[in-house]
Amino acid sequence: MNYPDIELVNNEAIHNFELVIDGHRAFIDYKIKDDKIYLIHTDVPKELEGKGVAAALVEKALTYIEQKGLKLVPLCVYVQFFLKRHPEWNRLLA
Image 1 (cartoon, rainbow, N blue to C red):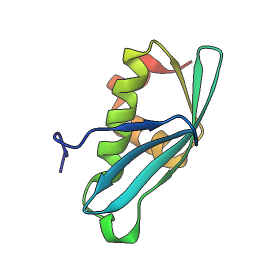
Image 2 (image 1 turned 180 degrees about the vertical axis):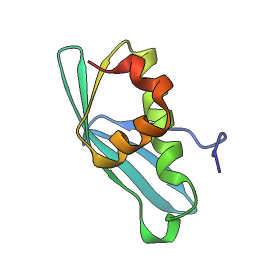
Image 3 (image 1 turned 30 degrees about the vertical axis):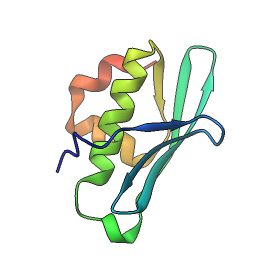
Image 4 (image 1 turned 120 degrees about the vertical axis):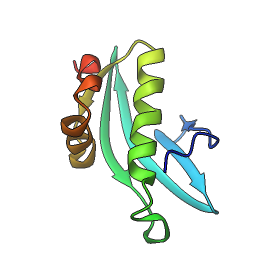
């Protein structure tokens, strides 16, 4: 699933990109320093596992990062895995 109609929320107060699906919150922890964004950890609740939520969350976050002109530092193992499967996003790497 792609979840095109669910909007990515940038919760700047707690440094999270968030998707809320069926009342459950999936998120990526991040930190911004200068023009670099560090994606630290992706978390998807058990209720949403296996439904493509993590991939949708990462893709929406990468789109946001590109729109803001930031450079990506993928510390999260899942984000690194996503980039291996979708090398077109490597253009964002710092």
